Every structure is written in structure tokens, then in C-alpha cells.
Length: 346
Ligand SMILES: *Cc1c(COP(=O)(O)O)cnc(C)c1O
Image (cartoon, rainbow, N blue to C red; front, side):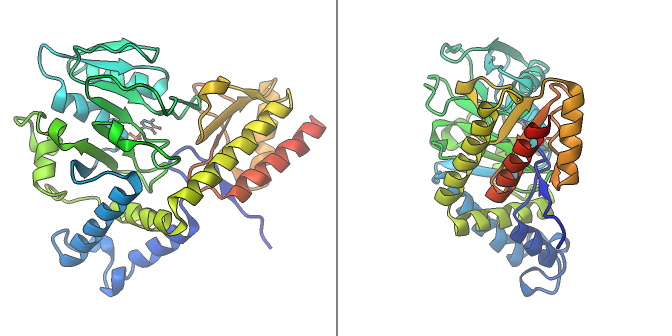
């Protein structure tokens, strides 16, 4: 028997095994059409049926109703760093950015190319003159998360949720707009899920080039231009999988996965956690070892045992364990077992 491979990549990240299997079939014979999903018209009944079901699945999983519009846009999360201010940051106004890590910084920098921003590092006080506030719910690189119960501002709240969307229970209706690149917890790269509250959406700019205009995409029902059908199909299969497993069960497992791993990290001084205890992420767990030499050895030996892609982001070094929905609990158990074996010989 060959060693099972566990892929802890931060993104593009592992897909559920059954989703990979479905996608194989979708690429040869989608829903018994004799054709693949990436070769049929986005105006066909087959594609429209997929979109309708996907929309319904997303509404169920996110708990959002008809007062919100769901868009699936090309350009990933980084595209949204620009599109959000492009659509809402009016001349003379400011947008307020909470910056507590790498991705929040990126979002703020991109917005500053388009208009005026104010920025802050601590939760709590917002610029209530701003047209919107922007937060990053989970900082993928440092492995830090915002507390789930923070008090929202009185102005519209927007969020980048790329690395923790649907990883734990959340009140998605607290946000006027949220987005996520789909290659982490939702599927494959090349797509952003964007959900916008309708009243807020109605205030978006209209006189923009259509490809970058939220209102145009909303009006065209997701087919203003040829959609990325492969990424959309992957998202569809992931939503089916989540509903079948039930989100409650997935979230319980995620909580257990993270708790076990943090318990191991706290157990031995060999592991040096990077995130403050009260900001620990449920999806990206980061730590260092005493020396870079030991880190190199740890990563190489882990890889040889099928525990892959554990290298921390180049900005921080060390180890990053990404444990999104599709990472089986067994992967985390195997990793912890390896950590203890490594520690005993370090
Ligand atoms: C990965 C990531 C991004 C960038 O996503 P792209 O789809 O590659 O643009 C943005 N924000 C967060 C929080 C991320 O984790």
C-alpha cells in the first residue's frame, strides 16, 4: 500500500477526494450530456440548471436570502481588492481599512490607488464618515483571525473571507459585501465569490467599464461575459459535498482539527506559535522551530512521509499548516504523530 498524501497547501488547496472524482466526469461527460462542462454554452439549459442549483446551495450554506446578490467573478480575490473601491469609493469620500496582516495591507494598497482611504490596526473605532469599512477575516500568512463577534461599524461592512469562508459558523448577514477567492476553501483558482446586500449594491457606480461593474454583472445574471465554467463547476461540486456532509459536521471537525494541532504546539517548547492565542486561525496554523536548520529538516522529513506543502509563506518562514474543510482529520492526526516523533529525536 502506498503512503497516503496529505496536501496542507495554503492555496490552491486540497479538494475533497469525491469532488476531484466528480470533476473528472464533468470534464468528459457532464450530467450525461456527452459533453464536458467547459465546452457547452453558458446560455444552455444544462449550464443554467447548474447555476440555479449552485445559487441555492450557496444561499443555504451562507444563510443569505434574496436581499443579497451572489456574483461569481473572474480575477480571484485580488480582483476584488480593486473592484470594491472602483465601484464604491466615490470621489471626495474615503474608505476605512482595518489592516492587521499581509492581505489586509494588499487590499488597502489597491484601494489607495483608486481613491482615498483611512486605515487602522485595531478593531473598535471606525471612521464613520467612510463609505465602507473593509476587514480581512482571516490572515492566511500569519494564521491570525478576527474574533467572530466583533462589533460592526455603523457604515457598510465589507470583508475579504478568502481563507476562512464556510470554515466555521458565521453571521454572513453582518456584512454588506464579502468576497473570497475560491482556491482555498471553495474549489479551484480563477474565480471570486462575491455576495452583496442589494441596497448597498444599488449605490454602486454605474458608469464603469462593464466587466468591472458589479451592477452590470448583477443585471446580466452571471453571464455578462463567458464565465469560468470549470471553476464554477468545482464550486458547485464543493457546495454539494458540504451539504451532503452537513456544514455542522464539517465545522465540528474543523474545530477539533485546529484544537488538536494547537494543543500539540502548546505542549512542547520545540514549537513556537506565531499567532497570539486569542487570534488563532482555525484554517491556517503557523509555528516556527528554534533554528532554520531544524525547520528544513522538519519540512523535508514531513514531505517524505506524505505530509506535503507545510512550508510557511516566504514572508514569515517556519511552518504553516492549512487545514481547510477538505483536509481530513486523519491528515491532522498523522501530522501530530509525526511532530511527536520528530520532537523525540530533535
Ligand atoms: C489567497 C488570498 C488572497 C489572494 O487571492 P487571489 O485569488 O490569488 O487573488 C486574498 N486574500 C486572502 C485573505 C487570501 O488568503
